Length: 281
Length: 284
Image (spheres, one colour):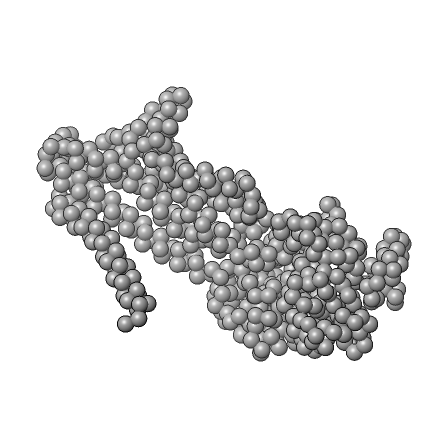
């Protein structure tokens, strides 16, 4: 047999096996969460806030953490989008391809991308002390916004860099100013925006370290942004820290709920993306 | 005035010609007589110090098809992109000279670039529909320039689609994405989109080269009809296309205008040796 066919076969085996390894990991994690979390999952878990002694096996649920996480994700995603879209638009439409500012900005966002969330948390915490703020929903939203902005910008930017020059030219030729091209640019990069949003939501909802100092943790549902808020990852953490095996199982239920929320958001996100990208050229 | 309609681009004759522009009184008369007016004077263009366009002097006649021909890399497309200043976005660009559109120098800092571009419908090599529905593609420009009346927009969309012969083909699916159209239909849509903002010129940069022969013929036929209302400037690689539809021809070589004049004159009786050789197919 010719060498190139052997090469082809080996490459294929390698590709298939790495895919299997990845899928096996994911399935294993999901299986573990299901096995331990499913029996402890009940309606009370998602409809009640913790009753007294919840972390020692008492009654109640984790509605506080579900609502807190959703508030933080919603707030930071909206803030993040409002800040990131103008940045991406400026980098790609206003600045020239070899602009130094664009280069430095992209480098900065790459670095920010890699900074661990605990550092963001500590950074935001010092600012909060300076401002005399307490741990609060607002603080949590702030730190998660900082955390996801680099994700937003870099993943939208990758798509925006592929923006066809002809498309911008066609828009300019109709007499559009740079700002007026935004309607065209946004439609063209809509799938990128959707993907970036999904990635950001995944990171935002799953982050524990950033919100630990800033949003705090509480058994009640916040009614204003100045009140502390519980989050699902921290809820998992506190329950898992318990010596009581029943409470540990509840931690897996909380993880299951977390995964389920991410799944629903992803599916809805994909659906919306398809609606938006049907016009893409 | 007759002498203005077209001349060969020898510098002396253009210098005389240009003196007319400096004479305000005559200038205004000229504008009153002619609706669309595009004149290039002593245009030199450099990209990163490379001299791309050399001393270009031209006049584009109104309500005619002007074909710019010449071998690859001779600066045809660059010249076309200079007319609506799309070239501005190129790195390291520098130009001297002037281009007059309806009495305004488009390089004058006071001239609004969006107004100039609005006057120049652009048709690029590959059709480039906007990422929106067929209807919105045409309505986009009108909305941008302040037309929001739904009834009026419906009317404009219908008119322009009829003008490019696309109405019958798409009237039942105006809400579908423009990307679903065939490539030939997309190019006609792009033409309609340009016409909707009421330009005076149509700039076409090898607008048929990516199309199949039938779509290509369709676009050519449209140009012949549209020249009754617009000045059409067509950059083309295909000499046969220029032979078929050109009223005026500009032959460029290495960034210079070698010869320009009425089509039958340039094609049948070229004054320059280089033009003759190009037409004979000695180089392309």
